[in-house]
Length: 473
Ligand SMILES: [Fe+2]
Ligand SMILES: [Fe+2]
Image (cartoon, rainbow, N blue to C red; front, side, top):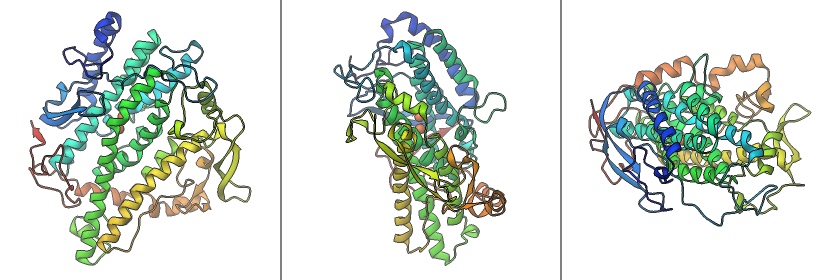
């Protein structure tokens, strides 16, 4: 197999779709449903074309092409990373066996579930971001939003390909369901909580792409280790695209913080609202909300299900191969976050296998800290004394050990009544949201930018900030 992609096909791909008539037909009959979903649930702002990147090769160099394309003509396709013919399963009971090219019968249901849960998040975020185009702070930001949207659509294709190619009729039914559920719907919501929340404004969008897309990075990282080789290769390529989504979040929050700091210094005040900025305490409350909701995506602190996935070789750990242990975890232990007997938040020791969710969540938190440190450096450089913080793992949780208790962002357990009383100190209030909403006036002129956001350090694909990234309809 080559790494280049066949664009002469109706569905661009590097999986030799032309050779498999049944599969090609099945996917070609799903394609119009996808396009209808894109029309109904995708970006609502009418555009003529957008300066987008399209994958042209899955190799390490020159994998993307940039150009203006009408969004509904974006070439969504199926791109798997190159196959390593000698790849072996790196962990669990099947460690050292050749990676599977077909789904092992005994793991069929579990694998299908993992793929469906991952697949469900991809269209969900497009739905959540559907209306943001109307309030874009600049043409470049608008273009970045659409880039993220088309690629999440492609990630849906990535999962649907696996369902169609490897899971028969049940897989095809699941593929239909992925288009049927929708974010925030009362009768058919998306599977995971964070993907039914709203993304009502651009601060929420930047926080979402920083914190929630980053959950995606870690989930894809564990699936990339999977013994099921097609899943591994799919996730490897998705991670490449995902990096851009997180960069949009990282630099987005950078630019909010930079602008806020600038206004604070210029006007010698913390209250930058009169000057069209977002106060730092509002940024902190958004951060608290998005981080805590994203922590829930990692599941309970301990899980025998996930232990079984690991032992079966379906889902590994983050950077499995660089771990210095036996990759089987028969007897090790690990510390997981817990509510201690004295009622405080701490850690307790459990068998390593059942603590895998916590292992991944800790990796995630360490990665999130990089962003917070970065934003604090921006504050420091601007001469602002305040700092942003990640809240405690126990704060505002719905899932797992801390789901049943209330805690402050510092991790002190408090009563539910006190939490309700003080909620407005820690989570976005109606007043915060309406102030942020009042700033969300579209700025769609080339080279112009909204008041609440600093311009980016650079443009896209070597273009300047002042460029016609999007042509409106
Ligand atoms: Fe994605
Ligand atoms: Fe993403």
